[in-house]
Length: 364
Image 1 (cartoon, rainbow, N blue to C red):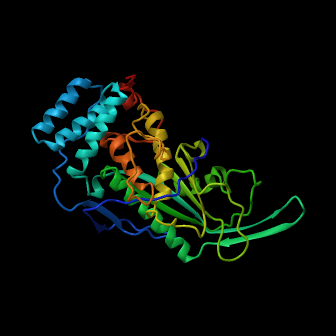
Image 2 (cartoon, rainbow, N blue to C red):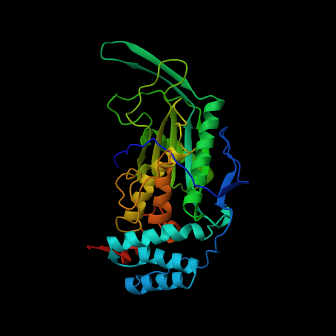
Image 3 (cartoon, rainbow, N blue to C red):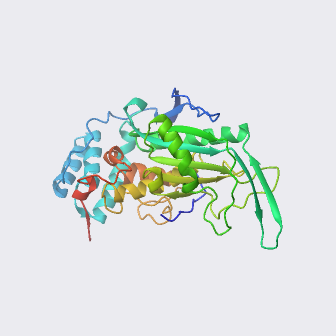
């Protein structure tokens, strides 16, 4: 998949929230992640009730009527669930879906999200941190440049906070249905080769594949997403030639067992001003989610959108108070995608039948 450029902006998470630290398993390799922060509404909110969907399609008109009746009866949890069923289990027009998303937007904050990490589905992430770049490159004029960049303890701490922030945002924005479980491996062996300047990235999936296999085999795990960090620039020495993007994502890489792949050409510009910690990772990861929802789960376009579409989504307007696009990512994850879709996301392309194949969007 062609790498997709990262939009470097961040977000306002909204009012009436508190954060409570939750102990999680320690991450080794000198890149500790902070404890999970669980965000939930301080007041109000009704229990979620039974929200999971059964297999098969539902009738649009009947499901919409159930949602409207539940709202009239004051059954907020049931109403939210029924509007979600309009989105993930019925055939209807895009206008109908826009209307359903508007109701989901109104009702979701009134229904309690899951705040128990043990009840969330795991999304397994492997982060490969390349500690050192030590290479040389000869220019066409014959001049050779020596590149040497090393990640220090502060660099690794920033990466740890970014990974922790990414984990927290996914858990919060998915209503507590999905929780990244992140393993970090620091690669001590220096990156010794700088590819041609036309190359898309410094450490591509072929370079990462060997380290991925070592981590996979050592832990006996199957990973859903692989993230690589390479230090391109620092305060000392010449900056390593870097690709023309802040970060990039691939939906699925065969050499990584089908896992999505995220590339962070890391440097002293991280964290990006005004962004939430982990927002760059979240943006790129959402490109993978956009891929798997439509290809692996078989859902129609509109069930989610590209994380680049903040200015093109017809039912989203960025608030003037938002400092970046994290507010849009919340919209994608909490209003386009239902709790059921989060309960189904997988990198497996062998699903038969595909959960989303029972519905479609018809022309208005």
